[in-house]
Image 1 (cartoon, rainbow over the protein chains, first blue to last red):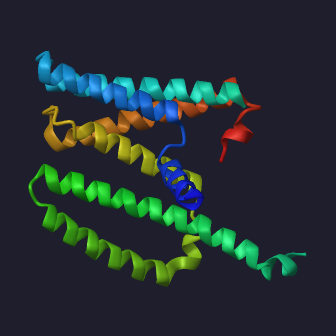
Image 2: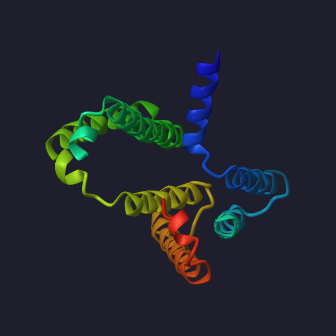
Length: 69
Length: 135
């Protein structure tokens, strides 16, 4: 079971180097999707918000990583 | 010492595991992309056949060119792949982008410019941290 747990952790680790970045990206996508589907946000605005949001999350992740070094 | 390391079976095993993880990750990414592209247009079968053909072709190219390929800078490759995946992901939000498919180039340009600006800022603001982050 330890081996299975280790293998699963390694597999997840290959995709998720920065958990905070991944979580924020997922939250951003969920929020924009909800806004487009339920709040009648124009899809083009949703796409632009996604672009700006992804870059903002990237900047925040890089700053945090640099501070920890 | 190098000759002794070359005969170290444990080093070979670790290198093999690291290489396997990298290749497995890239392979899984291909599966995700094929499913996303195929499902978006109702052509999963054709996308899968294309991926299978690409797999065979890459295997043959890798076998033929594995020595010069080992000299390709890994970090630069990962950087470009990250830019492309981010750009495609944003493009595929079905936002009816002005210019249709040409909008992908604009999105890529914006993401690339922002990423280069972040790297330059990182170099200037945290020069001591660059060594640790450069992995």
